[in-house]
Length: 637
Image (cartoon, rainbow, N blue to C red):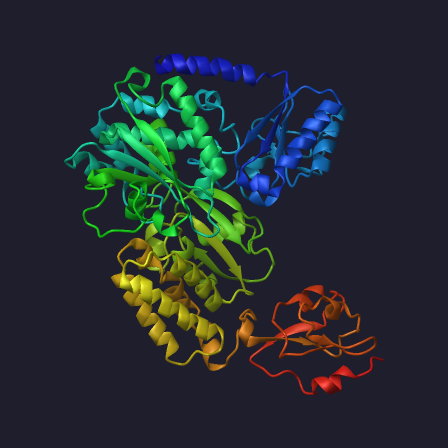
């Protein structure tokens, strides 16, 4: 069957499913939506439709990026624009069905906005939404809009047209198109994609392989997962184009087993592609044959490094090897291999659909196109975004993210995952592109972006990230295996008040040694959180070491919880909730915390009524005068 015949059949099926005389209900059922309660919302919708004998189609889609507003539910009435509701509960899902479908009340009080053409009085358009408005969605173009389990919808909306165009071109012309687009690898290093493909095509040896790196292991990162869950066909089409360009007949998608929904949607998409003749032998009669397999990883962070990933596919321990030779020259089973990450393959399909100049029209001078980011941490509007390269940190954090969730001053933005850099508020006008981030001591990474406010201790944050990367070290090379452990021990001493004036110099020296001497990119970037916090937040290290004080009141060994006598009203709430019975006092007696028993859990502060706010934290200063015995018998007036 030719692609034209496949497309005509898909269009016919798609148009039948999109009947204009039928109400359509769309539910965000990606992992983030399900975690927020989307399954319960789906059950409530189905029950409400059955109760009122209403005929409507229900579609489950991936993440549109408004993670802070999940679960999301959209309703499309005939002749009306798509109406989006956020923070939906089973109760108000049923109410929306009744009010909007039966009484024609669109419930503006619950609506986020409208999508597409047309408007509804009193409800804004989502094209002006602070999160969605500034975005340019290329890799995420279909996420949240199409059912990832329905190939007809994707083909009807342009999927695989990039493959058809690529098949009409010589492989060298496809590679030239990718080079012209300026696409750089979105997995972290930012190596030019076209150059990698060219090296693999020109390398001697057969067979050649393609690999999709979907081993996304950064804490707080979910860009690749969301793309695979919401639009697996964008990635799969990109791999087919790459196979034609480099001359590969076999490929692997290496995805961590902790992504069950992504794996499910990939398997469904591959099965449908086989049925439509879009993968396998002689694809759509073009002569191209390409077979794809899914390899589930066991969750080792180091397998995100390309040579460790290849070893894992081969059934060996996931341990990096020395380069060169690079995988494009000698990769899987010693044969030329192209490895790109999920987002890169998604961009490839879009470039071949719309052209290199279109893609290159977005972004910065040396960083073309768009980049997806998971915007998390202490930010008001958490979510998944895709913006043109060159947008500033300020625009991302404040215009899109809405600033800090606490309303307190921003202290830092950490980019690039656990191996990234911590950039201070003074650099908020920094352009987010490969070169600018590198000059500031950070990296693009795969796209994690964590926001920290003034309540974050930067020394403790560096310790946290180093704890993760040190435990995930494969241990093959000495600098990473032992250097990161020594760095972690120094950070633990500093956060515990045992640091010395020499600690910072030793820490910096070790960090530079690990960066210079580690075998793989993961080891080489592991010191970034330490080096950037030493560079931009040295005063916090000084406070921990010289004053034995944590300015952010975070490091447990340097803080004390204290009940202020003048504010205590002897309500006994803190006393009853203390898990270690460290609080003494009675009715009409000021309560006291026994510092020798206190575990610094913070429960007393959490449960103290806001109108009293009697519990506070102190660091680097003694508990105010008066002994616990004296304070315990002070009578309240």
